[in-house]
Image 1 (cartoon, helix red, strand yellow):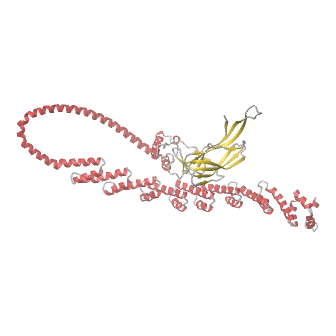
Image 2 (cartoon, one colour):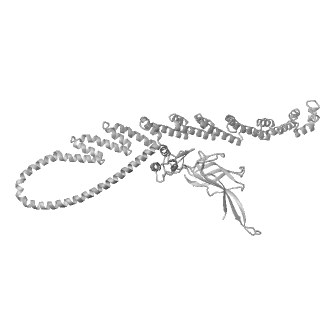
Length: 621
């Protein structure tokens, strides 16, 4: 069996803003294997090979088909020993949250001790492509904070879990971690990593804002716990009462059965007695009986039947059959308080519609009984709940239109600000700067700070893509001083990239603007040095000398000036400019090659020394 020895491992879950995939893990592995022995060898030989394995995870809803990376390899002294550029991973169509790449090996030299990875391009099924940068190195996502450590009270911790399960759309929604945001990601309490443009968790279906708001609002969590414990206590009390009621009913039923048995026995005896007397008393009671029947009929029509209808209507009302109850009370007209029970039934119907979330129907129903009870207040409550439901669905424009009419009611003002915030963030994402700027005027505090950071990140993204003019439009909106170094870092990164691409003048302009940021002064000297080398290579020695002088003490610039001056003198001499060549070489006559040329070339004697233009260095020895 081969012997595997991991030399170096990346931290888990490396990520960079905007990248659609996560670098889940990576390891540098050294494998010792046996090879077949030659005919002369007595035993098998061993050899060592070293390679890198990377595991990626798709965070995008689109299916990945290919990934291109650069791999930088370093030795024990942290010197770069090799670069594997544009390494391609062909992926068999990987969907959201799937991993890939873990089986592929990238061979590297046996001196490798560590490595870094830059994801340059991700191709999706179809024609979509995400493009990164060779300098886009990833950072690891911080370890998640367990909820049990953040919420010490076990009862509150359990209540958060119950509330979170109600937020989730499936039974995979189990709260384990503190919900938080990282760069352009948000991390669900269930543990899933989600992109900022995903309103709900890919795994459990819970939205970020409600779970974070609940975590931050300890008072609300305590209220929910109190309501839960109260409901549980009520359930227990109802169960106890139901048990007592059942026992009492069973006892009463047994007593009633015994009583009925005794009554039936007595009734049987009475019937026998009455049968004997019946014939004798029939004639004596028939006339009075007819009178009583007539009286009963009057009472039945005037009182008994209406009361029974009234009781039936009241039963319909209690059973929630409101339309039927209204019709029944209407038939009774002026009997008892039937007329007053009709608006009561309509009000209770409206209240049930409100509790069932049928807000439009509830509003219409309350409007039918505006003069009854607190119907106007209930209409306002229904309008507010409807607006909140629209808000929770993410339809912020519609929610804003409804909430602004209720600005002073309950938490409408906070919801309005959140609408503007979410609309503004979406506008930034869609590059609708005018809309984002307008929405920003309506937010404050932490929400304003988040939009400031979004302006900054959007500007950096445009600047990285080469659209500086558009980036500046976003940078002008960044007034938070703590974000300005982030913008400077983007300019600095672009300056380094331009140096790599040999766009020296553009890079010089950037580093000059940055002034004392980082090592900009050194970068400017480096650019002068690189420009000097380019001029030197093209035999443009005068320009090269000027650039070497501007490079100051960078590397060996001062030595390069003497050598380049000598090359300029030789070039002038070859071009027939003898006096100019002398004037160039004489000041560096201590440089051996310049001295030898001055004292050995006959042209200097003819055009300089013999005519007295200047002294012969040979005479000065």
